[in-house]
Image (cartoon, rainbow, N blue to C red; front, side, top):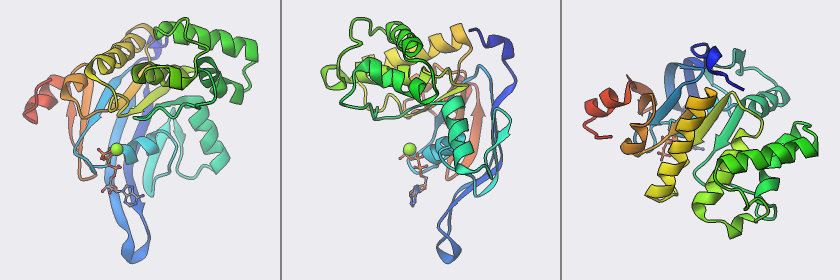
Length: 246
Ligand SMILES: Nc1ncnc2c1ncn2[C@@H]1O[C@H](COP(=O)(O)OP(=O)(O)OP(=O)(O)O)[C@@H](O)[C@H]1O
Ligand SMILES: [Mg+2]
């Protein structure tokens, strides 16, 4: 399916987004009013120092968490007051997650790990297996479908996790330091794959990374500092302003 036709429509939006932890005297505001639009087909990197709020933002964008004030809209759906079941439904239908640690199910094969999210959405087993096989092939894992995660390399395990994130054809793939645990070569492979998904399928991808060299391969860098957006623009420009080289 080519989703490039829908390019430029917002995939996700935050409006004066605030996230506070704790209550009363102990309340601590982590995000201080973020306004952000991620458009369909965009490949964005989120950068910023440790503790600047990147993961907090990713959780909110991914409907794993709710705003304390302001709004997050995912494909136009406002998540703030959604009941838990409806929030989970938005998450399952619209979002694919890739984390730093892959969280594959150790007792299930690569193929089974990728079919699981489809089974949860009621995709018939045969169809799910066919799509999982196709995805694993696309990620260079043909012939390794039956292996347990422990019998795959770290880079291969992360590629299985990416295949899993794509299983339900999510509107947006969110990666929170998906290459943080990989060597340079495997990190490059993951980003090559992201670039291909963006180019060939119009996939929207938002990825947190500390690596300016990888961030330089995206189309846009959003920089957070102390829970605020302090820069947002073309990678070369944002990296230059921060004195970093891509
Ligand atoms: N459960 C929590 N309880 C208390 N403080 C928290 C909690 N989760 C996050 N924080 C605080 O919120 C701020 C933002 O955290 P967040 O995890 O979003 O940062 P980050 O940019 O992802 O950092 P890193 O690069 O280290 O992953 C930090 O100051 C952190 O200490
Ligand atoms: Mg983080």
